[in-house]
Length: 412
Image (cartoon, rainbow, N blue to C red; front, side, top):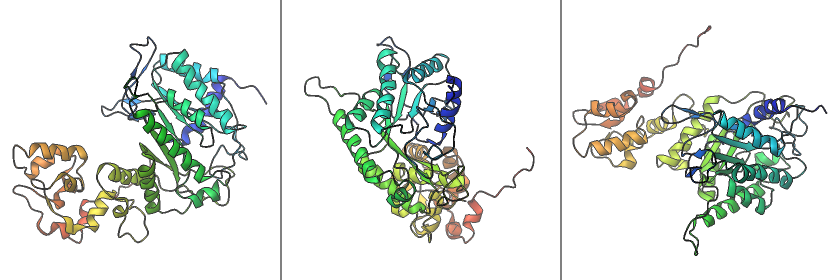
């Protein structure tokens, strides 16, 4: 096999890493290099070509250690039977790339995943060594996220947590049946055991020690996971049920949803077309309803015949339209939990409403100033001097407030 340059390896292995979605760094904060004399810092904000609240784009070096893999998962472009160009970084190359890119202000951290070459422990050993070298030898204090391998030894996972800000273990697909059918070499029970052990270790390290009364730093950004959506016929209701179980059982920071993308020479068991990208977006919105808006998983899609999220309107509006008897709500009297269920009101808008009504009664125009758009909110609230009357129960309410379909431009 021809010897590849570092640039060629980077082109192959950064492209191969694009299917990993779980690379935000929220919750990692608290590391800087001012005292250590090293380089870099970690802030509590998103990384990986995402956007901070102030609009700043934040990026990281997102690569695979190698795209060689001993597994033959049907949905994976890097499966052992795939006819793709292969490459493998050395530990030295990843460390050097990370430091060079950081010093040039290209990145703010590293997201490192890998195919499994020869054995899970051998691959995981190299990934841990990358993180160890960056932390101890290079004094790198920036963000590091390692995608761990479930079959790797507990000792290696523990070492990974000492150096990484966040660890993640992919559940691959929403159901055990899907994993067994499309990735028969992987065992769902092994994945769950690894996630449980990681949760226990994170909780253990979070407790103050008896001697120093301090908390050991161990994966402060917690753990996350990712599942592929659309590779099988699993409904959105089943996907959200799996997510709710993962959040409850393993205290995950995030569940990421990655829309299946058709790959060359794919198995006949896979769909020929990718699912609508809007489906992935709606799943994220539903996920936020569970995490930040007080919705139970079961009620988000309760009353839908097929267990699928509506692609035309967001899940909270869809729920409100199915539960009109719960509205309108008085913005001057309703508690926080009920205000969070009003379509068009986000968590910040609700906090502003609660703060403002301590000093004055809110009118419709006041609410309009506190939210992005009053159109969606208006039919579901009562305010000082405003009542929607029969509008809440109007037969054509959905058509009145749903986004209007747009004609796509033929030329741009």
